Length: 196
Image (cartoon, rainbow, N blue to C red; front, top):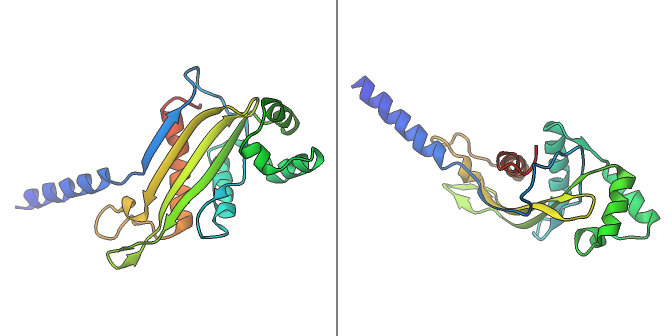
């Protein structure tokens, strides 16, 4: 009887943990060798949600994730100074920039990769009596020398997605969910051979 109960508990744990993942749609734009990131800059995240400070928060979380993964990070303040000196706006880099602008920027800041992010939507639906975050996010990795996208991912994740057994593993905060989403996406880029 004890063996039966143990097997049943193990089966439940395996079934519950297999459903704990982001729903990610990744488009790989390059089909060459894996891209070796030497130094990276994270552009300020665009924020289409109704939570005003979420773009700033997501930018800082992404910078933190990149640093924790061992990437050298260029300072966002240096980017702002560069843009001011060249009389450019951030939107010119994030929306319709030309190859020459990226080339000069990458040389000035000594970066070879850039991350752009956009928070598409955030909700806090009630799940089993709790208000848990649900976020839709877009992340792109760009080649800094010309601004071409190396990989683009759309991630839809809920705090409930990380539930293992009973109430364990549930992500209850927006910041924790954003960190998991960004970290998992960069890990997926490595797993798919886009980056080293």
